[in-house]
Image (cartoon, rainbow, N blue to C red; front, side, top):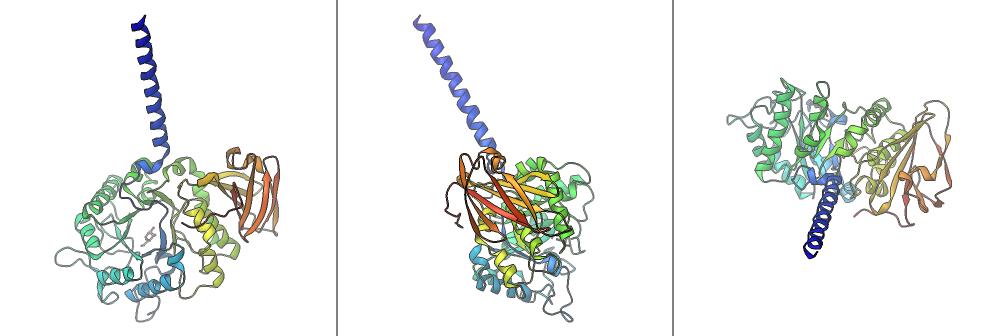
Length: 432
Ligand code: GLA
């Protein structure tokens, strides 16, 4: 009798342990950060500035001294990131894109900066950027050449990683042009990730691996996440509504594949913020800012901080929207509903809060009303039994308490967005 009881007890205990283990495994599995590239970086999406969309491959410093890719441009941007409040709200990485290199490697096979445009060299620039309390990003390519035709890193991964670490670089954007095969592409991205880690310096690793992989086969995001801190999926952003719209379309149509891949340490990268340039209307700029926050996207501005309107600056420096983007839970949002040319996106946040973005995609007519059942938001739990709703964009307004059974009516401008924060109380989320 005794033995039987003991056996039963130990079996029950065994089962209990198994269940506890299963639960633990489930919890760990649900935290994507566990499986991220283990370099401790990008626990929230990277914020900073990247030259490409606005300045491209302008190497003509004779004709255009103020907008060519040169150390002067980056020093000026560093000064402004420091003095104009950008650093304060989180924009930290000042990133060089393509076209910084000299046409040839040096005699020891190392990459070198163009001597005319970067006369003091990258190490000096990194020191300058660090002296402003910022970090420096640089660009290279996994293949034989960069997309603009400068020396590629193929065959030089270790030496290039060491060079960047030696110069004091803090982020590497690694492009995927001029690869001979998808195997070479994948091997190259992995090799560079390990090479960067081997240097011992903390270097954020920004990849374009899935973008170059998609035409051949569906990328394995679990694997990509183990090697990269963020990864581009879709084509280059342009300074136009058409471009921003197509990136949103790509993201929502592939959300089943990509949303679960994002989390602390690794993020989907829908490309740069083009707010403050020429191509987006005010409402479209609001849409880009709101949706990049919902998508937990890296916030890398590509604009001219020397010439930017106060309005665009206020939008890019909006602390409430940045807090959504940088939410420590690190879960990417998704498209919840699409009807009558409206889209509703939502993102779960820490402290049981939710962000909701409603976009009016109709490009004819004026502002249109959209009414939403509160119960349909936040997987039915965001406002159960009630929540406090604050409109963050276009204008910060406390809308008040809403019960689960109530409706919320908004008016949204064509191609514009209303961004809401659904919280448990009136207190606003603050930047850490
Ligand atoms: C590719 C990338 C861009 C930019 C250019 C530079 O197109 O996707 O973001 O880096 O190359 O040549």
